Image 1 (cartoon, helix red, strand yellow):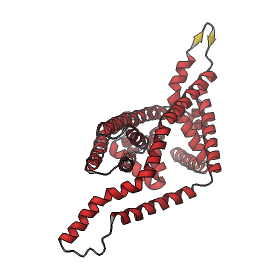
Image 2 (cartoon, rainbow, N blue to C red; image 1 turned 180 degrees about the vertical axis):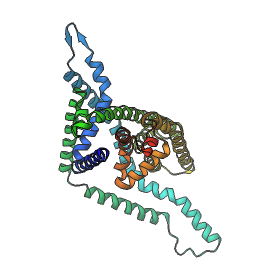
Image 3 (spheres, rainbow, N blue to C red; image 1 turned 45 degrees about the horizontal axis):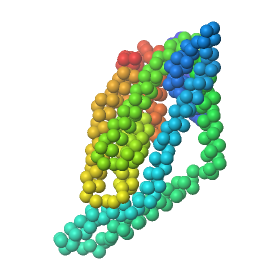
Image 4 (cartoon, rainbow, N blue to C red; image 1 turned 90 degrees about the vertical axis):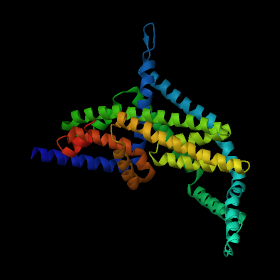
Length: 366
């Protein structure tokens, strides 16, 4: 009866916690982002806190402030470096995209029309590349025009962004200043009798997630550098190569589907920003596809298995199934949160349900 009562209490706590997370999703997201940023900034806070001048010791609040300013400085620096490049490429895409789209399909379409004529097939339905490209381009433009109008007012968007940035910065500061603050917030959500187990589960979760996020950042950085260098090596101009690699690196945080989207966008940006479409361009296009394919294999065979096995300690197939389920439930956001959420769930399951055989099999490597 005691065990049954314990499981009922845990189930009720999980249900209530899930409802609170859903109802206050924005606040929860701010807290989670701040928690991740505090994990990234904690080593720097510890290093700065060790600074001494005679009898004066660097206070923790000042170490947290300096760390937060450094983190913001890095973000602003990256924006100053990459934003002008991205803006120039967007302007180039706007100027060249329709013309290049027409040129891109002109040769395949002319070959198709020639095939019809050579084999005396009725070609009454055939049309010019200009007609097709204009129609498709107009549909794409209409879609983006509609999407832009549906975003909402600029003022509301700016205000929401300001609130989000201020909230995340404010919460991150206190997480950096007080090491156990985030842990204490979570522990206080559980009954007194479960506090010891929750404390152990949080420590283990933080350890695993720290390794995961560090590994993910290193993985994205490696892919960004290698892809930009490879694209530049095959003749893509440096600005375009950096933009493509940067987009690919950012999308890499979305497991499995992110790199695929990055590859598709990379091909689109490459042909849309090209001045002319000729035989050399088609060769470059195939090289771009080959580069992304090779790096995807490198990522799937070497990087991801190492990250998953050494950080979250889960089998790649297990992770893939979890990501599919999360994507079906919550789309891209679910895929982003799938691995961290599954890691925390496994740790808590091992702490409170370790007598179940299925839990033992899923958590034996933790």
